[in-house]
Image 1 (spheres, rainbow, N blue to C red):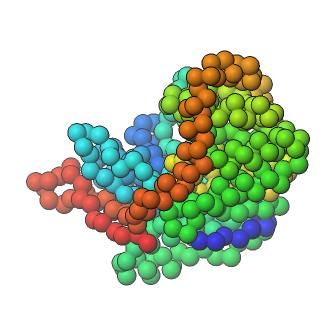
Image 2: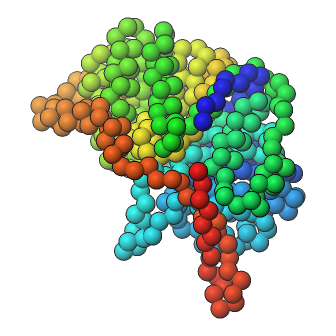
Image 3: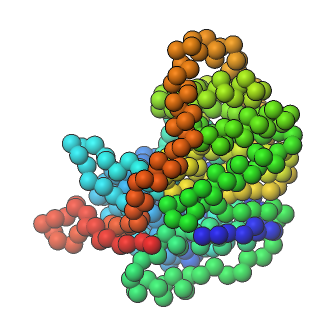
Length: 410
């Protein structure tokens, strides 16, 4: 689906759960007409329970509440958690649930990785933050560093449309309900120019990656990329290198204390290629980096759910917003440079070159794998997304179990 640039928006950067959760939960609790929420993960911890209560409050206000969770990331919600939501009138959709094999989740690929909230078609949130206490500093050394934005203005209609499109079902009973909640015309809310971008397995297979490529190619002064899972395609690596060669200050902030050690190993295979042409690489070592943000020069930036790895760029459903706003660009730049100075270790080329002789064949193979991965991924069928509606059974003999009604989504 093609989205257009929207003028007249207000955008606020939200750093970590400490800023994101209070804002989004207040918006949900105060909803009067509608809440649309998509996420990869909900945990039944302190944060997940507060989300549950906010959604119940919205439903009791009379709002239509639709939440969509991923069948892999949110596979373990308890029957009690779901039943409390459904009883209040919340509709819970599970994206592509899969059967377990020997207790293991098998539905690994083409996941719903987007994180979007739209409230009353007036305010929306988009970013990389899931609903779990691991996004709060109190979680300890493994608490995640992450980002989201709150937006108001015409861009909200596009986030609303993206969420509604995922919810489209072949059930006529829902059509009138959706029409009654169509967003109204949005007035001027600020001075930011925004563009909604998605990656799916239909028409928009490389939209987010293309915006990254365009920003890198057009950069004249600086590029900063802070990304949790950095193992991009060959084109993106090449453009980062080319930008550094033509004098752009290119800075990467990547994981130094990863939640998945394999991620750091993959990222480090790209270091020599980038460092030798002047790219500066920092590894964030204070705690796991989960952010998916970038900026170019003094106006362009992006915040969203898309990592720069094969899963996000070629398989998963992702959503980013592209932002043209000098003030937000400056705030994000100042924050990331402070992060680099206070909590990161610089990666020197000399360190990367140690033992390079035995890594060289592996690096060669990885580069060529990255170069051709989108075509390789295209060999596998991009199945049509499926949503399953979760409902508690009314049969007393089966109480506590959940009934799943399948809905097909185009």
